[in-house]
Length: 147
Image (cartoon, rainbow, N blue to C red; front, side, top):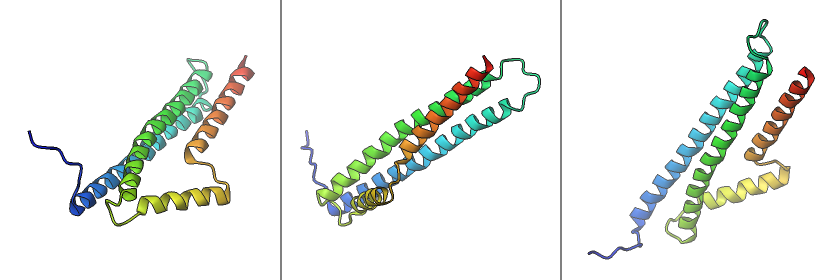
């Protein structure tokens, strides 16, 4: 049985780094496409619920469905964010171990963390959570006003 080596040649490390980076970018694109789609559906259902003149169901039902779809989008965001973070950490590890000459991921982390701190910007995941909480509270208030 041949011995397994963890050593990569510089060319192999470069190729691996590019493949991991492409995968990371792919998950970012998928994450935001899926989240945007489901949040749009959620808001469309909410908007249409206010426009129904003779509802066959109580109006709160489609509003609750819209809220559930929003939280489904949020949970999907979290799962895909974890996958993206896995690839980011792998890239950082490659950079820290000197397997690649460039340090794009390291510099990007420093840049975004400094900007977030400097301007007091919350993380996008936190924004989605805050907005979801507000959305849920609004639906709960509508539900209470209907009773």
